Image (cartoon, rainbow over all chains, first blue to last red; front, top):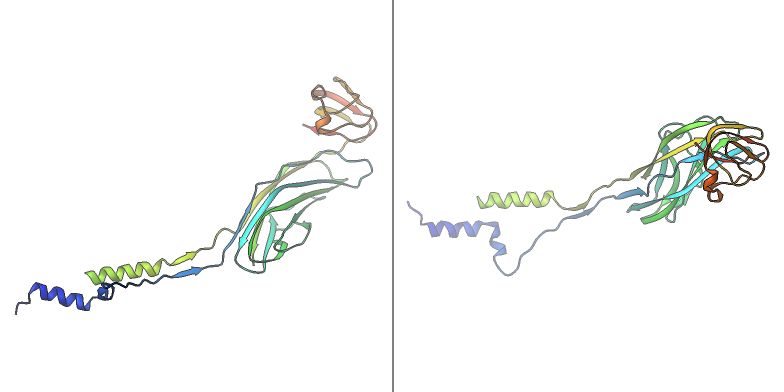
Length: 161
Length: 96
């Protein structure tokens, strides 16, 4: 039995899923999803701390840097900013960091001298963005500490829940 | 054939919905530091570049009071000196 080609084409159109879109109405399915998003950036690194002077009678050497900023964006509530250091500070010295915040609660100056694990600097950060927030580093050394040759530490800031 | 194409198209659409993926939530900064031992009265300085304000002289530098730092320093005071002596107020800015 030989089936004519036009008949074959017609039968195909009838069973084709496209037959519903051949009129003047068509539909599409749009899938969407917003996943948890948290971004953090910093404006750079602070200038080197060089302590080379002290007032007579003062018990500690101190230097402060307020030159860097951070920015965050998150669509999650109750986030926090935690800070850690890659290696301990030399004996007799301390490194404090304070991160200002308009979206959360700043813990003020936090000692990260030996913070191998993250230490909270800002907690309770709400949804939205927060930019141009000041990072304050303070280097403190006992007056009795000996000279410390130039060295560096890597500070890691983490925005997490 | 057409059905296969439609099926493949559907799979592609399902596999690429509009989604905002997780982005970087970490940043690092480098903190550099050094501590030069503060001078005390009577300390001698050897082979250091010293910035001072007043009462200065190259060669044998004698600081008798109120050594200044930074902007108040004149270029003439920025010399590479071989020795200096702090006789009174021990406040100095020293850059090696």
